[in-house]
Length: 568
Ligand SMILES: [Zn+2]
Image: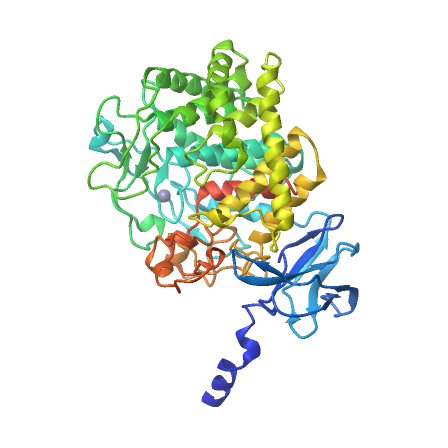
């Protein structure tokens, strides 16, 4: 037995294989490629030719030559490209590269990303707080009883006593709920509906509300919206967060007995401007999105948005810091002007009222440079969404010069991203500076920016470059890893995610996007990696690497948007 084991351990072939049957040197989107689009795989070992073989019988259906190797500075890899765009037959395939091996499997087909969209959206359902969650017969054992049933006001909130506020999504690998990160996440999902609704409306997510007459993406978003609405005080302001004072250990959500505390700024007016403006923006989107399905809820959302907006006029920049003794997520933002701009733009888009338009037009020009590249942290930089929603609105009374300026800037940025993506050996939009905390979210955000540019002015190159970023996330990267749990033959396995880390399941909860490589190394696992690693390689598939392997609702939402844009 020990001889056999030693043989296996030292087999060189085993060393280059992942959990599936593929060589890590051959990089494919482990989900697949649309039938009518570009199809490119990458090879990170010396080779000249490749074949695409049918998975069912290994028959070669496409032969091609690899490009000469190109040096990728961000990973240090030498990369050749295998272009099999000419393959026009739907099916399951793998790449065979003589002298290197075979790739993980992938599908070529009409609507290859629908299941990944389904899993990524259900990832939000799995994050639901305050109710029993069960991922169903597809994923037996991925379930938990109702969690966090008791909430109360923290001293910093300016109020006392119980405040349960049951609901919302667990933010990330922890069980906190945070208004500003909820804002961008929920807003992004509602935008996905507004832009890609026809492709999404019939996709059932197998959640408790399925079949109630409202599309499931809106059912899921409402779970978090209802919690956001509960975070609004009588004066219109919104408290910043609801969480325990300290992060719990790696326990299941229902085992976390610490009270979920509503926290504020510690001094009057106790609510924060960024949280309140985000509530105004998201409430305004909800008012137009839910109107056909539940006018009463739409009206309630608009009323909350108006009151939140009015509060931010009284308190234009009340910022939040964690109160002393509190170490859970802070989401501190020193400047709430961009959140207010977003609120004004969404309220104007929904109501057409002059007050919001005037505010927007007075402010927008200074934010135009924010359209050039996705922000490093999309939860604290809302100006891009503010500007884009104005340009997308199509509303009568929009200022033509403002719309033109925003369009031109978005399109120029998109063209630059396309050029850079084409020139990158990995065909990803990320630059060296983008390999920071949540770099996978930045890749998804580049995709989102490109898809929105395509709404402003349709160009196939925008859609192709957006999908290139998705290919990167689903396996066409230096690790040949799918960064979405339980998706593809070689998905990452050890997210910093308490339900996964505390469970007995063989694999993590499904459909969740990893944060990705992070050259800033803000955890001990990354700090211990070799000092000379190029930025794209500073990643560890380990539970303890919260700075490279946590999941989080904001970049999950960008992933959903990117996937939604691929559906037919
Ligand atoms: Zn919970």
